[in-house]
Length: 119
Image (spheres, rainbow, N blue to C red):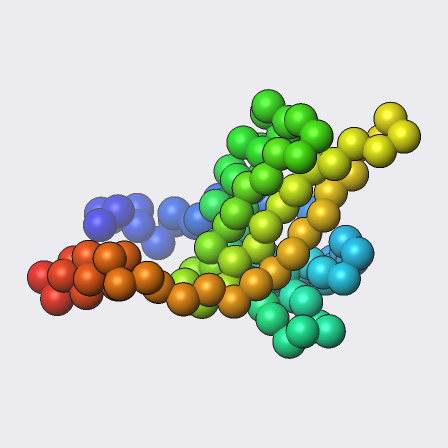
C-alpha cells in the first residue's frame, strides 16, 4: 500500500529499548522485533503490544497523570491485558503493572466474528 517506496517505510519504534530489559515489581519488560513484551513470569503471563502503540499509550498515560490513574492495555493476542496504575506515596510517583488473562464477552465476540467474516 506504500507504493514504490513501501520497502523504505518502517514502523515507528521506541528509542533505547532494543536489547534491554527492565523489571517493574513482578513484571519484566523488553522490546523485541517491533513489540514491547510485558512478562509476569511468576504467573506465566505475557502481554505483547506493538512498540509504536505502546509508546502512544505511555505518552497518553503520562499527559494527565494523577494518583490512581489506570490504563488498561489489551495485548495483540486479545487474551492478556496489562493494567498500569499510577500511585503517589511519600511524594513519589510510582507505577504498578498487573497482567491478567481476559476473555471476550458475548457482545464483543459477536461483533468481532461479524467483522472477521466480512473480510
